[in-house]
Image (cartoon, rainbow, N blue to C red; front, top):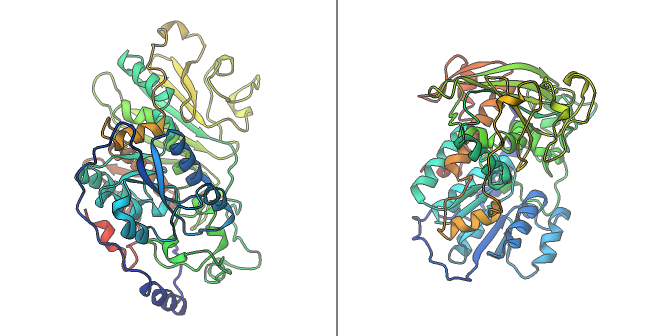
Length: 482
């Protein structure tokens, strides 16, 4: 396994610049919960204001529950930040979340973190320690250890936290819970979770991004940095890397050092209700069944992972979640799949077997031991019973709660102390730990056993080390203490 090289001269220059930056804000003890008036809005500071971060800002503001008091982005002023900047021209602006939280502590009730996967962790850790509510995009964190620390911090600081798998407050959430309560999800033995469409990132396959260079040459040659980029803060706790245009603007997702790949991107939208309501916990084995288009730096273009969970009582036998990603990597589809209406787009009618379908909408197929199966898409899409010879064995779909608050309003209600957030870190963090386990299997390109009790990978030393990942850069160690 190779890792990114640190060039001595560049590293010395970088550390000199970092040392002259504003000092880190000191963690404060958790503030007492604020009592809100009937029409009082929550003061919101936003970290990451373009792309999905911008979408989160707009969605939170649409609830009517928030008031934006600060904007923060490591590329403040870049094209993808312009829409939010024009919308809130008088709101204070920052490049560094630490400076923002330090200077505006008493004016902030909650924050958003719509930033690359690797910097979810320090932003959330500091905000929680300062008593702020946190809305952070999925997956919760970049490593298994970071997920555990965030779960622990949420419990300690008693602040409202929400991971941004928006469907976890949608119809699928309430329908699936009702199906479990009605006994319809007893004896589930398998779920196929699939994301077989193309991606808006990961354009290099397994090749060096720049022709005529090998990996060492490419990694150690810095690109021209945009004038608005705060590279120190963008890197966060990661060890120093030369600036590369191919790391930023969404492309970070495909690099092992910055993102969690297609699994981190979509797994939290597809596996969420099954994981929570079937009490899956951690798998006891992660099997890598197929992998293509891979190297030591980026996630594979295609892979199949089998997460194997033990039985959980008499009604919940051992169960597999099989994750299929990559164009053409379509799971075998049950008879009647194409004849069953869904609540959203799904695989086009093919008139043949699943192997003839090259791409299908991200989603899931759930199998019971008695042969009944259910199909559904991603996010908040509800499930349908697949119409086949076993249809008579399935009872009518149960009624479920309608017109519930969406994920953003659910967060607002959590900050106000009116309910627990649906995807609080104790829920979303446990799911994200599974996603991290899958990312490790993709990185080491092998299967492994997992000790659920001690949370250790028992048969692969390198994989076990990746539960923690690389040590934090000097000056960022404080975030790893709760």
